[in-house]
Length: 362
Image 1 (cartoon, helix red, strand yellow):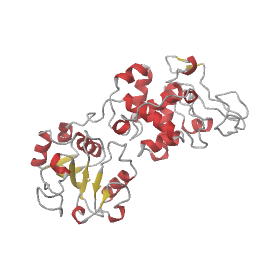
Image 2 (image 1 turned 90 degrees about the horizontal axis):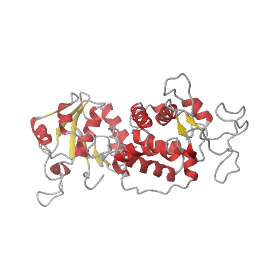
Image 3 (image 1 turned 60 degrees about the horizontal axis):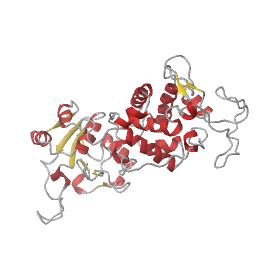
């Protein structure tokens, strides 16, 4: 990670040459802001004290799944257990976990001079990565958090380090809009990012079902819709990913859902007549239209709608569960700015979202 200088080693765990695990489970779990329940693997692999703090720290930054913090903790130090280190009840790790001295002598690293030394390691001239989350000195100085409330911020305390990592990933933006980009900022290595994402995917339960409760959408005070759309939800025909996306929007916006299955034609406009047409994803419960956002009709002057579309544009539809596979909107200048973003004459007064479905993935 590096606000000031890049961490050029991924922590001691990378020195062990961790074998890459299957990436097949990454697709949904890592980017779903709905806080997933820990998997059986998470409960077996993560010390209970740290599991609780990973989950709490994740909630401190919108868009940051706790599973990503846990994935970083695993790759960096095996949750503070690297080299036989042990953790006290207050989170202190002993002996301290230290990366190599960054004097440029280690292949693949750069020298990181540290005039005046560090309060957290003894080398007087060069830095080294610190503690279970492997902070550089200047980065911890800037983002360090007293997570256990003992009045001391220490990178060698696992609880402090977890909350500090959340603060760093959140950065000055106050939220995470792309999980992959956030991890890459932590350590600029695609191999590292994939290792973290792999563990993250294994630490959370299947996100297809996490929080995607149609009744929760029906009961949400920020969501309104007509009787026909309520019936669509009550029937159980709406894809869980659509439900999850709408629930996530309702955390920040008031939305009026103008169509789900009902309220939209079976055929996509101007593609022919049924059955000789392109079938709309609405017809299979994989599409939704939002006509009013935050009390204003969706149009090219609705600033909340534009902000929402811009947020989706920077998300990766291959890996981020709460990013629609495709979305139509009234903003012509944003059409084609990212895969799935489009504008045409049929989408000047609403935002259309669609997914490929939870079975096929999105």
